[in-house]
View 1 (cartoon, rainbow, N blue to C red):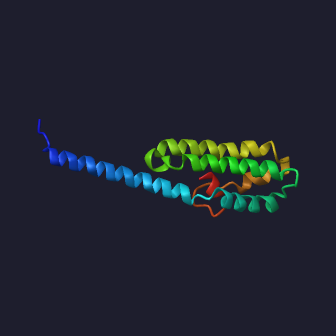
View 2 (tube, rainbow, N blue to C red):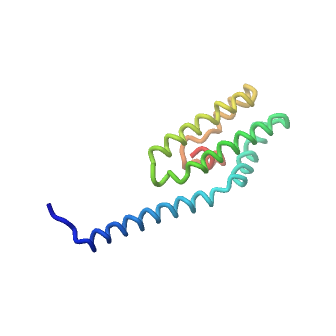
Length: 132
């Protein structure tokens, strides 16, 4: 069994710390650039006229959108460190949105919403920022 000289072992340890720190800084930067209020305004601005959201429905839709955006923001740091865990949690958020919206919208609005949901992260819909 070969042993690394202490200086090499220390160098490997330092490289590991640097890589871990870089990953952490990238995750923090991504989270900081994720502006919940701005994205929420875009999503609500898209959904309201498209689905003809009533004044009575707006608070519930706004609350749900903000809730899901905050959940996403909270798990974003894991996107780089635990890709499978992040993907799993985002799938839950993606599935939660139409489920909860079904209780807020009428049948026609809900059917229309299902047609608006983005299929992938490359969609140009404002909903993509929230759901992927």
